[in-house]
Image 1 (cartoon, one colour):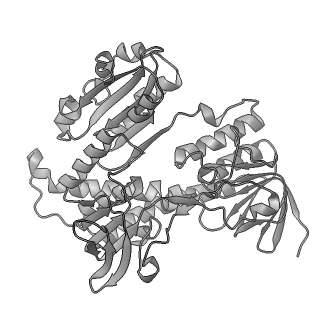
Image 2: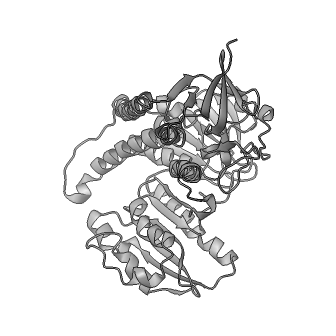
Length: 460
C-alpha cells in the first residue's frame, strides 16, 4: 500500500453539492480529492430530475397529441416509441454528465478518484489501493431507493426509480407501490405512454404530507386519466404470477390483490451511509442512518461536514446545492449562512404540477397562529382556461398579526414556476401587502396571486 496522498480537502460524492464545492475550494488555491464510486452528477443527473423530467416531457407530448381534438387539431392515431423516449432521455443525461466531467477535469488542483470511499480514521479515506488524507472532509453520498422487507419481496422481480431508467418498452400493467412524489410521477408518465397503471398506497390518501385538499385534487387528476388507486392497503405482499407479479393490497376489503406485468417500488429513500466506515471517523448518525449535522452542516467531528440527501436536511437537488452554498459561505466568505434560514419548497411533477412553499394549512393550524387564507380554483384563472388546463387550485396562507406569508400551494398549469412569486417574497420577509399591490403580467397564472392576496379570510 502506498503512503497517504495529502489534500486540503476530500469530497466524497459527486452529486449536486460536491463538484461546486470542489470548484470553490480549488479556486481558493486548495487541493481537493473528489471521489465518485459510479457516475458523476449523482441522483439528479443520472436517475432523478434530469432523466425523469425529460420523460415527463415526452409523456406530456403524447397526452397533448391525444387530446389535440379538444384544441381543434386533428392528430390521428398516437403511438409512443419507448426506445426513442429512452434514447432522448439518455442523451439529455449523458450530455449533462459529460459537461460536469469536463468541468471537473478542468479544475486545477482537483483530482478525481473513481471507486468506493471508506474511512480508515478521522482524516483518512481509502479508495481501492489509494489512501487519502484530508485536513477537511465533506460527505455528499446521496441516497437510494428504500426496499422494505415486505412479504414475498424476495421472490419477485421489481423496479426502482433507478432501474426504471433502463426501461425501453411499455409495461402492460405497471403496479406502483407508493403513493407519494416519485411513485405518482412515474404512474402518470407511464399511463400517458400507454400502460395500464395501478397505484398502491398503504395510507388513507396520496402524498400524505400535503393538505387533504391537495391530496384529493391530485387523486382526481390521476383518476381522470384512468389510473387505478388502491388506498388503505394495510397488508402489501408479493408473489409470482403467470401474468407477472401479484401484489396483495388489502387484508380486509375489496379485491385482495392486483396482478401486474411489472412492479415499481416507490416507498421512500434511504441514505448511502451504511458502507462508509463512519464509525472509524467517529461520525454520528441517527437511527435512520442520516448523518447528524448542525445548522452549518458540521458533523460532531469538527473537520467533517455532510451535504445533500445523506444529512436528512432535505431531499432535493436544490437543497443539496444550497448545502454547498452554506458550507462555502461559512468557510470561504465569512458569511454565516444557516440551514434554518431555508424555506421548505419543492414541486410534484405530475401534470399539472404542484408547487409548494413554506407551511401547509395543517402546519399553520398547529402553529397556534391566527391565519388568513386565500384560494382560487384554476377554473377561474384565465391563462389556465385559455390553455384548456383548468385542474387544480392556488392557496396562500398569511399570519394575521405579522402579515407575512406562511406558505402557499399552486396546483395547476405552471404551478412549479408560479410558486416562486410567493417564495421570493417569503425570503424577503415582505408583508402580504407587497403581493397585493404587485402588478403581474397578463395573461399568466401568477397574475391571480395578488387577487388571492386581496381576498384573504380567516382560516376556518
